[in-house]
Length: 271
Ligand SMILES: [Fe+2]
Image 1: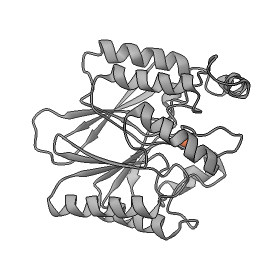
Image 2 (image 1 turned 90 degrees about the vertical axis):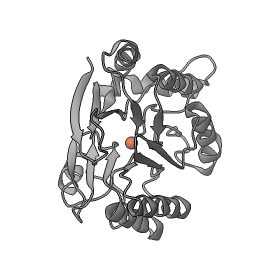
Image 3 (image 1 turned 90 degrees about the horizontal axis):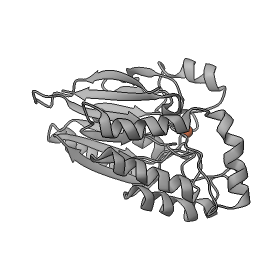
Image 4 (image 1 turned 180 degrees about the vertical axis):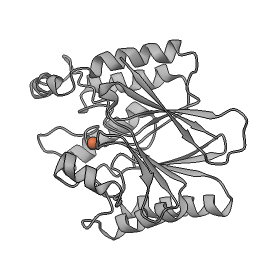
């Protein structure tokens, strides 16, 4: 059963009615059919026990978009909505976005465009990122959209880093937002390293699951600096547990939602 978590997000947008953003992350859909190959179908079967309630949650979400008394004003999807890019999964993703019936922003997770065989290879980048982009109807590397006086910035960090191009575009948009007093929410799959997040991330995963740690290259470091300095909030997923705490410089709060595959849907009420 879907679990709706309510989070108040004060950004000073100055409207009486809160702007309601639904946040989905890590739904890990595992569809495959006759259009997909034998390897893809076998992989899908093998993954079902890992996220046993994902497809029930998908059905409940589709129903919730139709029936919810309070529909979302905006939908934010922070990656790993599909577990691998079969044609069946890409179609399910498109159907989910259409059913939402509201504007949305999608950022890719490490799973959305990859299979374990040849994981994150150049071939997978060239083959599946364009398919993912077509399925969601948005660019997957970088996207900045304004809704209700809030700037939502989506940046691809699904390979545990951001590119120079994405770092530069993000820094430029965030600096402009700050200058114009426009609140900015940065949407990521992989969260940003912080002293508050580190202990739980290491305890749960025993492997690096953040960006901006000691592995960070120059572009990723610059990206994290720009976010910490000029964004109001980060919304992310990937680690599969709840975490809401300021980043280390204290200006920007990072919100992480657990698995939508387990039924969690966050509702951010932005005021
Ligand atoms: Fe992930």
